[in-house]
Length: 229
View 1 (cartoon, helix red, strand yellow):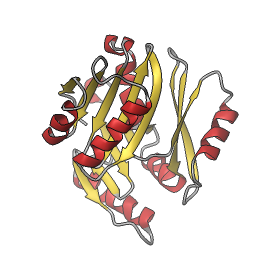
View 2: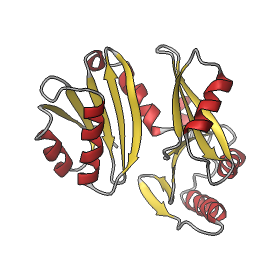
View 3: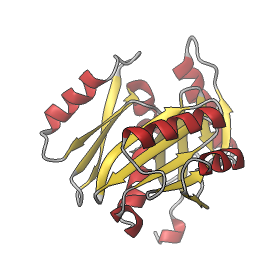
């Protein structure tokens, strides 16, 4: 099988549905949510004739994650994850993503029923988290050798990564309800991390023109990136 023959799909699991081919499919929370979500995913992919994909990347869009150094034992990292977050509503399966070069471990949780559903249908599925993917995209760039913030803003979320002294200083994800709410979280993180509004840089991906305009009034060096949120 050549690389051109490999059929890949990407699914984003959100708290109230899923996204596939840049289209959001809403599944109302409530009784039998997992069953209804699974049925909706299968129906959507069967309609698109993508149910027999060779590879599947499943992005977990949630706020349940924990960052730890790689030199922390995995069992301790798992304990830190469990004790630093409120108890999950349902049983969870945890997944690790690693940046070996910079010694960073990212642990995040997935509803166990949904986790096993994905693996039953796509045994070679890879589970990722958008916050750590954003970090990974920027950790290797020259820009982060200077103090800066990178933010990926969508309609309902903001992923924020702060680099200081050439290394990771903060990574967090916020659910938002509009540009004003996103602006609040960005400026709060900026202040809490001790970044300078005159000297340091914000690299903003996605977001609305309103958000880019508003935050540009507070941060002198604000660069709008032409990347998909």
